[in-house]
Structure formats: C-alpha cells, structure tokens
Image 1 (cartoon, rainbow, N blue to C red):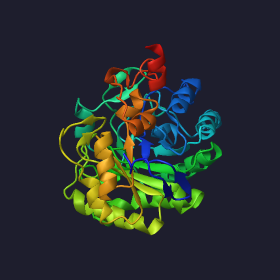
Image 2 (tube, rainbow, N blue to C red):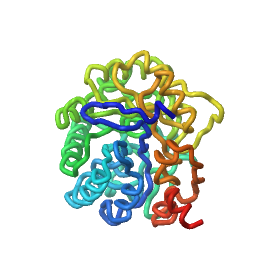
Image 3 (cartoon, rainbow, N blue to C red):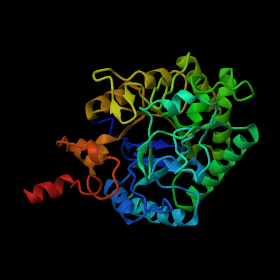
Length: 373
C-alpha cells in the first residue's frame, strides 16, 4: 500500500497518509440540543491518526435544516463548545478534522424542524408519499412531512446560515469545512432536475440549477479562504429520490465552476453506492475517473472501496485520497491495519444509527484484540 501511505499536501494541510475517515451520520449527539458530547469525543478520538484526515459527520446549520435525530449541529454556542473538545482531541493525536455542513431540505419532518414545513427547490408530492423515504425523528423512522418551495429571499437567508455555520466551525477548532451537496439533501435538490422544477434564476438550465451550490461555496470561502473549503457531490446518485436527465453534463459543469474557487478538494461519491449500501457489487469506480479530467484540484474518492481498490485508484491517478466509511466504523485503527495488512473487523449495520455506545465506541483496536487473546 505504498501510495495510500505516501504523504500529500491538501490546501494548507499536510497529511502523512491518504486514508480518510468519511462523514458518517451516527446519531449520537446529546439530546436535546444536538450537542456533541463525551461519547462523540471518544468515538472520534479513537479514529484519529497522526497525519490523517477525519471529515465530521453531517452537521446541521440551523434548526430548520435538521432532518436526522441525534445528528449534531453548528448553530448554538453549546454545540461549538462540544465540537471544541473533539477537535482538540483529534489534534492532540496529530490528526486533522474538517466539518461537513448539512441542510437536509425536503428529507425531514416537522418534528425535526421546529414545526415548520421542510423546504426544497420545488414541491414534489411523490417524495413524501413514497413509503421508502423516511426521516429519523423522536417518533421513530417516519415519512417526511410535505415540503414547500423556497422563495428567492429565503434562499439568500440559507446561504447566510451556511456562512454562519462556517464561522462557528472555525470557532470550534476545525481545519476547514466541506459542503454536503450529495445524497439528495438541499444543494442536491437544487442541482438535479428530478427535484428542481423552478422557472426562476435557480431553475431550468444547468447554470441556474448550480447557482445555489456556487453561492454557498462563495460564502464558505469568504470565511475560510479558498484552500480550507471542499465540496462533496454524488454524480448520478439516486438516494433520497434523486434523478437528473443528464447527470454527466450537470456535474461536469459543477466541477468546472468549482475550479474557479481553488478548493482544498472535491469529494466524489461513486454511483455504485446508494446511501450507506453498495448496490452494484463488483462495479469499478467511474466517477473519480470522469472528474479527474475536469477538476484541477485534489480529489477524494468515496464509495465502496477496499484497501486494494483504494491503492489502485490512487496509483492510477484518478484520486489523491480515498475515504472509508463502513470500515472506519468497525476499525478505529483503520490506517494502522491497512498499512500492516492486518484483518479488518466486520461492522454491524444494525447499530449504525442507534443512540448508545454499542456499535460505536466498543470496537477494539487490533493491539487490544491481541492482548485479549
């Protein structure tokens, strides 16, 4: 694994290896208040490594952006204080941590948004009528509430919510921010024409549908500077009822426009993954290869990678780093194990989105397993 464990500079950050912890919603923030607490601090500290990068779980930018019970936020002073303890612990182990900023848009319920209707680019009743779409709420997993289309002044206000969350991320000690623009959440709802039926300056053409994302990126750069901001996209992604008539043209345009910002990296989810599940076993990575031809900066590839396929995509030049999700859940010392060719522990999908330490902080590192044996 010579390439995975070679050093690389990304923006102003210097990494000693290229095994990235992907953003993973785990539902363990303290309630009420969506405050990162001691359990989350232990979890991230376990997974920090010297010269490594952790991308935080998706973190909501406002009360009305919420859509997943137990997900943390970055809109209150208490949340900032909670994150400070986590970033300090990661830094103490020589690691770096970036905050992923999140607005769930229509993928929510009034129980989560303070009683107001979820918002989106356009109104799509088929979305909330489809029983396969659910939101995590105090009442359990239930269908999303009916959503409404944003007015242009409201769009501008949400851009400001992102800007304010970026400021709070800086105050919390993060090394940068990543915009979550994938998986059918609000920026993705504006991008893809399966959900965006607007006829104003935020709808219709690819250029108009990209406007919201680019305005958010501009706001984040105004806080952090160019090379501390990143974007995560899911080209051809279908999770959360997403679709587009020409995804290659859409996301190629997005990547070209993002070149103008000089971002830290572009985080690309392979379409073989739907949500947290690999739906096309055996299918090779195709998205990173496409964007390597377009995007001038660093690329993090995500979605269904094994250690050998991660090494291969870096060696091919299609990606610079690879993010791992499932394996980082069950292997807190994942970089150590991959570097030494050690076996990886199996993950328990049933505990991904529960609310306690089981399946969260109780996976032992390899050295502890040897000692126990």
